[in-house]
Length: 452
Ligand SMILES: *Cc1c(COP(=O)(O)O)cnc(C)c1O
Image 1: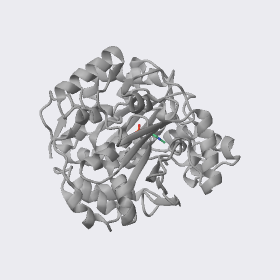
Image 2: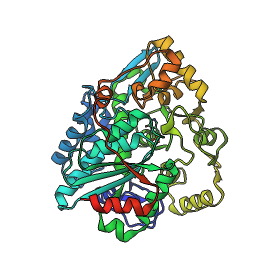
Image 3: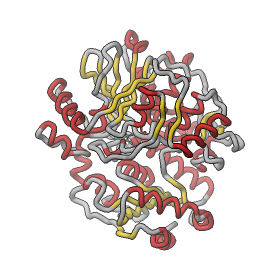
Image 4: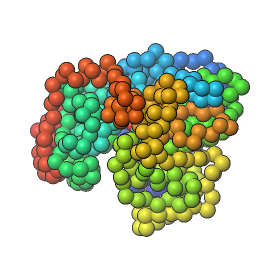
C-alpha cells in the first residue's frame, strides 16, 4: 500500500516512510492511495479480540512492516491498557452505548494512537540504528500521551513544551512525574501559542532539526488515524446483529482526527449510518455542518480544553475526499482558507454528518444529567456528546477521557470527585520540569545538550 499527499506534489511513499516523515514535503497530509473494501472480511472479524482485529486491520495498511513485527508492536502498545477489553463498549440505555477509550496509560483516547506510534518509532530506530528526538507543544493530553508512548525506548527522547501554569495539575504530573531520563518536560513562560511558535521556529532551522534528528509529534501522522479506526470497527462488531445497520457514532471533536478515523471505515464498506461531531463552544465544525461554511474564529478556553481549537488540522484529509480526490482542488481550497480564513462548500454530505456545540454551562449540566439518569460519570469532553442524541439511531458515544482527569469540573457538576489509581500514584512522585523562556534560542540550547 502506497501513501499519497492531499496536495499531489509528493511521489507516493511506503507506510514506513509516511510515518517517518509525518507531514508530506508539499505541505499536504498522507492518505492511502486506495481504500480497501473491508465488507467481505467483516463476518470473519466478528469474534476477534481487540489486538487480533488491530493486527488484521493495520496489516492492510502497514504492508511494509512484517506481520509478526506488527503483531508484536500492537501487543506492546495495548498491553499497557488496564481494561482486558482495551476499548470496552458499555450499554447505558436502550439505544445508547458508551465506548470507553480512557483505559490507556494517560487516561485519554490519544493513547490508542500514540502508544502505537511510539512503538513504531522505537522499531524504526532499532532497524536503522538511528536515534530520534521527538519535539512537541501541548496544551495537555497529547504531550502526556506522546511521552508515555516513548517511555522505555532507548533510542528515543522526548522534549515537550507546555505553557507554565496553563495545563491542569494532573496533566502536568502526567508529563513531569515519569522518572525517565529521556523525557524532558519544558514549562515555558508564555501561552500555548507561544509554545507552538517556538516549535515552528526550531523546525524552520533545517540544519538544527536534521543535526538532532528532530521529529514532530502532532495529530497529522497517518499511523495515528489508522490506529484510531480500529476501535470504531471493534465497537461496531460488538453490537447485536440487529443494531449494526442503524449506528451513529457521536464523537467529541477538536481537530477532526478522531471522527475522520471513524468515517474512513464507512468509506471502506462498513455500513455506519451517521457521525455526529460534538464540539464545545469552539464550534467551527458545528458551524460547518449547519451552514456549509468553514470559517475559523477566535479560540475560547472551555471546560473541555483538548477541544479548544478553531482550525481542524485533519480536516484537509476529509476535504480531499469531498473534492473527489483531486489535489488541485484541495490546493485551491486550502489557499483560499489561508487567505480569507473561510470557504463555502456547495455540497456536503449532511445526511451522514450531524453536529452539536455545548457551552460550558451546558457541559456542567450534561455531566449532571448523565449522572442522574444513568449513574455514569463522563468527563467534560465526553459530556458534549450527550447534547441532542438522535433517538432514531443506536448511538455510540466515544468517551475520550477518564473523568478523574478533570476533578474540578466533575465536582462542580455532581458534588463528588472521581479518582483513578493511575493518577493517585502520580501525586506521590516528584515533579521534574525545566522552566525556560519562550525563545527558540534557549530551547535549542537545551535540546542540543540533551538530545540523544
Ligand atoms: C484530543 C482530544 C479530543 C479531540 O480529538 P480530535 O481528534 O482533535 O478531534 C477530545 N477529547 C479529548 C479528551 C482529547 O484529548
